[in-house]
Length: 474
Image 1 (cartoon, rainbow, N blue to C red):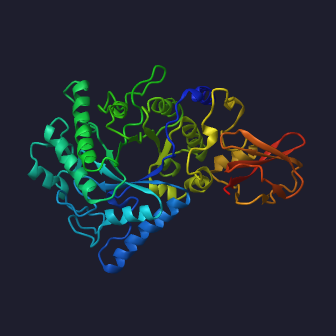
Image 2: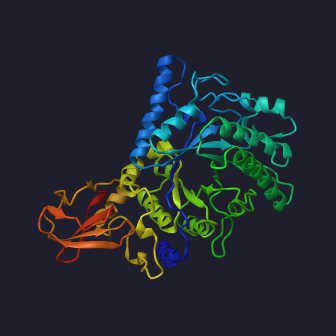
Image 3: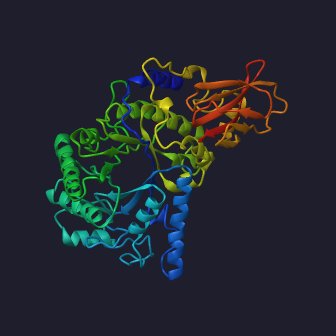
C-alpha cells in the first residue's frame, strides 16, 4: 500500500507548481536547555571562547552538507539569548537565569552564518513562558497580569487577550531593529496543548491570526526584506481520503497557516510533518499544492533515527527527502544535534543529496515526464539489490562518495567477483541518465552534466549493484 501511494504521488507531481528558485535546506538550532547548543557555560573568559567555538564548529559541519538556513532559537520561553530591554537572559548560556554571558550570542551567530553564506532566522517561541515560577514567566506575570494564563505547571500568554499580540510583536520588532536577521520564525503560534478552548474554532483562528498579523506588520514596517515564517502543526486539516487523526493545525489548534500564506502574512512555512507513510506523503503534497507563490520546507523528524527516540530507519528519511524535493518543498531537520551525530548515516547522505545551490533540473518535471514505477522498486534512492536492503536494515551506508571536477573518475575496487559489463548513472529519483560500457576502473564522464548520481554496475544477467555516490561539479 505504501508503494502504491508513493507511485500515485509521483504520477500527479507534474501538476504541482514549483515556486522555489533556491531549495531551503534548514535546521532548527535549539538553545532550550542547551539541547543543541551551548554545551559549555560562559562562566569564565576561556569557557566563553569555548562556547563560541562550539557554535562555529557546528556551523562549519552544517555548511559542509550545504545547510543554508539556520533557525536559531532566540526567544526560548520567557527569556532570550541577546541583551533585551523586554526579556531576561536565558540560563542556557551561563547556567544562571538573567545573567549575561559577556557577549551577544545572537549577533555572533548572525555574523558567523553570514560569513558562511547561510541565512540566520531568529526563532521566536511566541506564547509559552516556561514554568510558572521561573524568572521569565514571573516577570511577565508581574508586568502583564491580564495577559498570562496558567496551564498545568506552565505559564502562557493568552491568545484571547488583544495585548498578547503587541507583547510578542514588540519582541520581534526589537530583534528586527537591532539585528541583521534574515527572518523572524514563529514557533507555537497556536493554542497551547491542554488549553480548554471555549470560543468557536473560527474565533480561535481569528485570535491566532491577530497575533501573526500584528507581528508581521511591526516587523515589515521596520525592514520589509525580513522573511516571516512559522512552524505549524504538520497536517493542515483532514484531507478527502486521509484523516489527520484528530491532530491538525486548522481545527485542533486554530492555526490557519495556509491562509497566512494566501494573505501574505507569511513568506515561508516549516510544517512539522514528523510522521511516516500515509501520515506524511499526502499531507506533504497538500502543503505543496497550497504554496500561493511562497516557500514551504517540510519539517522532518530525524530524531526518530536515534534508537533512544524511535524506530525509524534511514530509508524512511531518504524517501521523504526525495519526495519533498520532487514536490518542490525544502527540508528542515529537527534538530541540529541529531543531524550532526550522523544517526544511521544521514549526515553522510546529505553530502551527496544537498550539493546543489538551486533546484535540480530533474525535479522540474514536464507534463510528459514518465514517473518512476515505485511498485517495482525497493526504495527510491537506494539499490534494488539485497545488498542495498541489508545496508538499510543495518542503518549503514557502505557506498563511497566520489567528487568529480574533471572529465574522468576512478571507480572503487568493490566488485572483483562481479561480472560487470555496464555502468549506469542514475539520478536520486531513480532515473537512468547515462549508461556506459565497463572497460576498466577509469571512466570518462565528460558528457555528464553537473549533478549528483548513484553509480551502478550491471552484469550480463542485468543484476545491478550500487557502487558509489557521484557528485559532478565542474
